[in-house]
Image 1 (cartoon, one colour):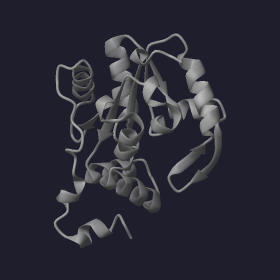
Image 2 (cartoon, rainbow, N blue to C red; image 1 turned 90 degrees about the horizontal axis):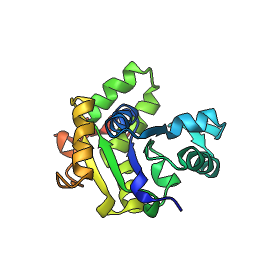
Image 3 (cartoon, rainbow, N blue to C red; image 1 turned 180 degrees about the horizontal axis):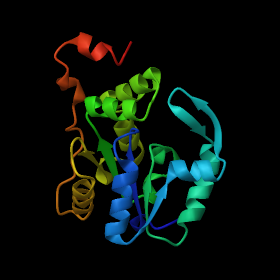
Image 4 (cartoon, rainbow, N blue to C red; image 1 turned 135 degrees about the vertical axis):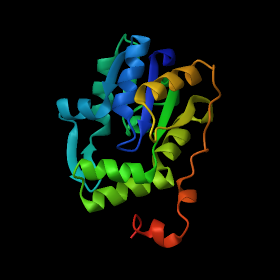
Amino acid sequence: MRDSQDVIGITGNPGTGKKTVGSLIAKLLDWDFLDLNQIAIEKDAIIGEDEHGFIADLNLLRKYARKAMKGKKVVVAGHLLPSIFSKREIRFVAILRCSPFELERRFKSRNYSVEKIKNNVASEILGVCAYEALKRFGKDKVAEFDTTGRDAKDVAEEIIKVMKGEYPKRVGFVDWLSLFEKAEELGRFFE
């Protein structure tokens, strides 16, 4: 078992800034950075694809991620974080959140299909990644961060301050449903 003090996790839905913010945190702390998606691709741990993207072989991904981290202080980013690591293996987890409207713009610029945009935005509105991280790692190791319209370096610095106890951990303050005045507005993501 590795020392949980040596692993910081960054999770969230696609488009929330996991790779950008995670790599900045690693740089600021002088730690290594690992992207779970990149490991899955490089190590051929992909077994298929669905409307959300690729499907990873979680056992293979877990094996390769742990091997890549051995003996290092690491910031690990990926929406699969709760499926790969246990609570005792992680020191702190930052859940990145982003406005559904901003995510929709980002996904369109990435040429995501209409279905993929709907699925990913709906997942963010419902807080699926936040729920999975809280369920796996517990409230004592997790905090949410709204990245909407924010500079990635500012977010990275805030995460480090929260992790060090200089700022309080906050969970559950993100409520995207309140952005929608009418159910019809929300319906476009849940049709």
